[in-house]
Length: 325
Ligand code: TXA
Ligand code: MG
Image 1 (cartoon, rainbow, N blue to C red):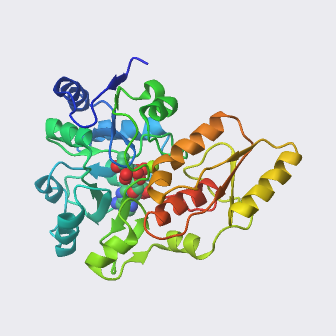
Image 2 (image 1 turned 180 degrees about the horizontal axis):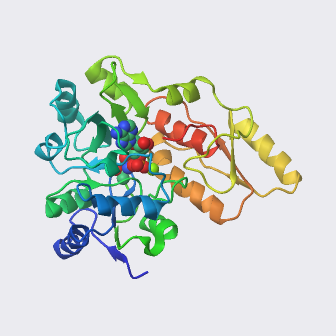
C-alpha cells in the first residue's frame, strides 16, 4: 500500500519523520509504533484533527484519547496542577508503558477528553514515537490504531487491515516490542486506580505508591475467573471468531477434541510460553486465527501476576467477558 513507509525502529530516518510531522501539522492522521502497540496520531491541540481519529476508528465519542508527550514540560502544560504522585511515578516509569490520568489544563480540547475534566498522559520510549514528538514539538493524541472493538495492532499490517486509506501515513517499524497496551492509572482517585492493567504491573506500581486499587470492571473480571461459558456482554479487543477460555491444558485438549468431532474448526491460542512472549503475540495470534477462518478459539488463561494481569484482561475481553474501556 502506498501510505505505508518503513522506518528503522532504532534509528528512525530523519526525512521519514519530517514527512510524518508535516502531515500531522497539516491536520492529518499518522499511525506510528510505540513500545506497546501502534497508535493513531493527530495533533492533540487541533480539535478538527482529533475528530478525524474518532471517524477513522469508528470510535464512539464518549471514549477519551491518550495524549503522548515528548517531555515533562509538555506534560505539565496539559495538567491543571502539579502532583507529587505524578512526579514520583514519572521519575520511575517514564518513558514507558504507563498512562497517567490527571486533571486537565483548560487548553486540552473537549474532543480529546470526551468532555471529561481529566486527561490521560503518556510518554513512550519507542525511538519512532519519541522522534515524531520531537519533530512536531506538540502533544499527539493517539489511541490504539485499530478499528473500535478489534484487537490492538502490533504490526503495521494490522493497521492497514483495519484503517486502510482512512490514515494518511503508517510508519512501519516492524512488530512492537511489548504487545499489550500501557497501564492506565487514575491519579484523581485515592488510592490511585488501575483503569486498565498493562505494561507496568500492579506490583511495580505498589512498590512506589503503596496500595493501588483495581477499578471495578477490572477487579470483577479478575475475581470471577470468568470461565463459565461464552458471555453475551460487550466485546472488546475481539476477533470475529468466538473465544472460549479454559482452566488448563488438559481441559483444552479435551474441549478441542469434542468440538472438532462436532465439525467445528478450532484454533488454539499458544499460551505455553513466557508471559513476555505471550504479551507480544496475543493480539497477532487472535488476528491470525481469525484470518484462518476458525469458528472458535480456545485458550488457557495465564495467572494474574505481573504482565499476566494485562494479558488475562485482554483475553477475557476478547471472550466477551470484559467491560469496555
Ligand atoms: O499503549 C497504549 O496505551 C496505546 C498506545 C498507542 O499509546 N494506546 C491505547 O489507547 O491503548 P486507547 O485509546 O486504545 O486506550 C486508552 C484507554 C481507553 O480505555 C480510554 O477510555 C482510557 O484510556 N482513557 C483515556 N483518557 C481517559 C481519561 N481522561 N479518564 C479515564 N480513562 C481514560
Ligand atoms: Mg484501544
